[in-house]
Image (tube, rainbow, N blue to C red; front, side, top):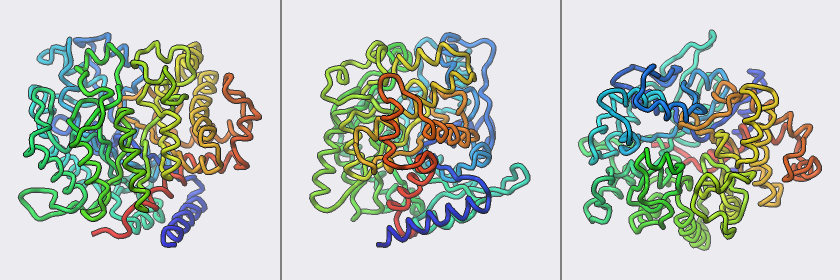
Length: 522
């Protein structure tokens, strides 16, 4: 009953805000708002509001890497000024201390021009990365400093186009509802990408099976849950709930297998290898159990993105056991795309190589959602954040389609909107029920080095994406041999184009947060 009342209040707040401002309010559950400013802090004094232009020197040590990353914007996509201008009021703040192997690239001479190459691709001024020449870096102190960096700027006024804005880290359901009422406030929901933050880099020496190391990892989980002080040296507890945490990211971290994010050439350059497609480890299982345990601090919901398919299947079995005990934990894929097939399909479990999806409509690598993944989200009343990476969202057929048109052309944009729509519609078709439209939102992964749709490449362009989605569903067109116009109308289950767009761009994410935030803060 309380949850239903909270939802009604939240939706009422949104309606009032829309009436006052004349604008729709948008939400993005996964974005790297502070990755570039935080990791560049010793070189440039950026804050979360500034647009950051990547430093791309004329001469780099690996020009081919820069050329191959052409689709990655060389500017920040989710700085808070862009969010305010795009009326993106609710933001999933993804904290991700960069993994040490990410910037220990093969073929780069770091002492000369390698740093310029990395800065151009990532937007991070890498002279600030003190682990460039280290392998035994502990990540949790980096996470603590990352939290402090974000805390420092909250509540500070920022003038944008004659209006004053500020941001606040969400402390509770009650606080979230208060922020929704104020059109000058941006609500930042704290999330973490990568279980590596709980320990140290294992690239040189794997100590993840040592008891003393495992105790450190579990202790750090409890710090993030607010069950223990955040620091060893002072009695201060984290006042903000960590809403979700991905167990894995790009590299092996001792918690279990991760899905492959890299092409063969990228895997070689980025020193990737160990851990791909492996099952979850015993330490990973202990971390998951500790995260969801309501008796030991606030619940942190595991974010399934980046887990290997074997790890995901263990997790689903664990959630089934919890449901039998009347405890439902929602399955979250915070920034995802669909694979377009069952995990029983022989193609899905083939090694992830570029030719695997060359003749496909969807990108069928195992980092993307199988039909079974989609059903687990639905069964648990979970959430899929559809990411805005043009190559992760589609296979070779649509990619070849949009690549034949010039950038920023209307024809190319039409293909892009079909790609986003076909991912949404496939989710609905797989679930086969009207409630499927409650199971997705936007999880852009902006500033996560994604290959952006150039028409929708910053938070400022969220209104454009919303308008184009609404226009498509208002007058749908066939999507390849996958969905006819009639299919699309049937899969809308009686919802209007405007209702679908509002759910996708705003209300689903906000309702999901309302359901799962702790009622009150510290």
